[in-house]
Image 1 (cartoon, rainbow, N blue to C red):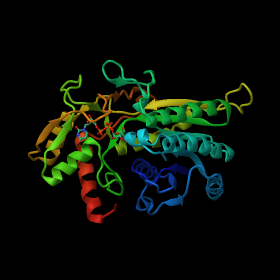
Image 2 (cartoon, protein in one colour):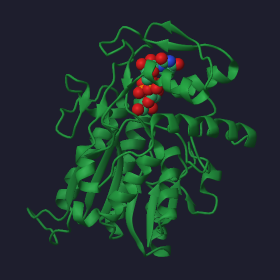
Image 3 (cartoon, rainbow, N blue to C red):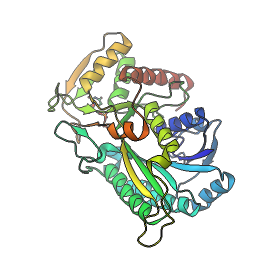
Image 4 (cartoon, rainbow, N blue to C red):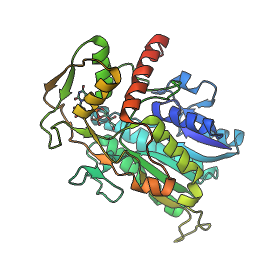
Length: 340
Ligand SMILES: O=c1ccn([C@@H]2O[C@H](COP(=O)(O)OP(=O)(O)O[C@H]3O[C@H](CO)[C@H](O)[C@H](O)[C@H]3O)[C@@H](O)[C@H]2O)c(=O)[nH]1
């Protein structure tokens, strides 16, 4: 049995591929390598190309008729970049998702797991988000994901296609066996900056200390990328119980189905708490200084994973300390191997 993974040479997609492979489902990776890394596909069945390339997707299904589901991770994901170049974001995240889905339906693949974002929700007063929270995407990146989901839901109502969208926030960590991790040399997120500061012997700058949270710093739902990847696997193997196959479709008759499942820790972590966890891991003095929030920063949110637990039997297993340790180990290994 095989699974097609688009974006399978990226940070999350490559981790998903490893989980499937370890559990006996062979990943078939489709990645343009625009942001993905060639070495993350070593030992995998790999097609270099675009998800919108219908001839290529047809070829993949001819070569691998035993692909039973597709995982669509290929996307652009950097919020500030999406504000500077929204056309590119809508083209890649929305238009190509529409094209790719058409290629899936044409090839008879009716199970699609879509990598989405919980960044499209307006958080509740306690900063939690759940599947019933209102949608209020605030930038082109989250809007492109929301629009793609709207299109997928319409497709699932009309064509022989079932779609599960998994929404989550900030994956950190790396493959625990250190085969893959973040591809960027200098990630700009809080943990990436912490690792950089620590390794340079400099203080870490907390940007934003006046938010309405328990300690004044912003909150995020950092979650181990392996836990996220496991949720994709659980969704694939339970697909038919999450979304049972319906009838053959036709006008007015829904043929597939659409489901949204949030993934998260159920308990966010503030920047100061992340610093405390980092100190526990490095067992060392680690200084911080304070500065105003970054332009466009938000107070943040965390994800209630109750539905994922109920439908997928999934909850995160790694602690934030373990995720920090894997991120640190990956940063060292990547430098030693000069991967980037
Ligand atoms: O050196 C730093 C970096 C960040 N922060 C703070 O840490 C919090 C979280 O920031 P991150 O950058 O870790 O997370 P964001 O959710 O804000 O954004 C990141 O994750 C998003 C995905 O969820 C997008 O990919 C985005 O482009 C990427 O920067 C923010 O208050 C930020 O101001 C610091 O205090 N110091």
